[in-house]
Image (cartoon, rainbow over all chains, first blue to last red; front, side):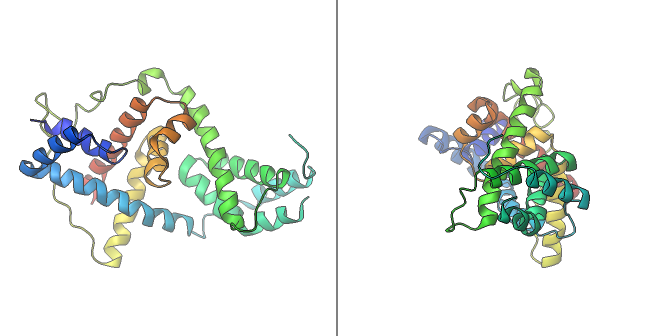
Length: 87
Length: 180
């Protein structure tokens, strides 16, 4: 029988690669009897789902911008090189 | 300057900056990678009309960010990377492998306002993760890169990647629980 620690590791792993059938069976069995690990597993899935929403929000924050100085500097740098010239 | 350069900077510069800042978390580093991206873009305008300029530029930016992260990873002491899955998890579990603090049930936000608050907490908790953990976690769970790709890009082993992702998720979950 898996410990909660082992189960939490396998649940995390399952988000990164398919588990072997042996691992999957062991986790399922553990989750069946452990409410805490069930919570943990569903919370990880929930977090992953929310990250997409967060990313969308972050990229839409129009008050976060390049400074004017940075824009000018980048424009100057771009002006100083010719297309197709290698660095 | 290539005609597109100025247009790209005006139209997409801020967007690229926000993307870079969300990953590198340092305004100067973020400005630098945006600059490198713009320069690379006008030097090799292999931009193909079928993709949007923004998507194309973001693709270049992601590579530049990975370059920075790879350098960053090299500077992290091996002791911090080469860890057993067990290390530093002592806070989370007791000696017999039981939860030291059992995960609580969360109220899943149902309303827009609650949802917004949840995202704020998620953002804060992400920003509290060590940069290396936050980066690899973002590559995996936001960019949906495969593990092999991540390991190759950052020059780390699969075990390292797996341990870091596990730690990131444990830390993030705990932080959300304490603040939600």
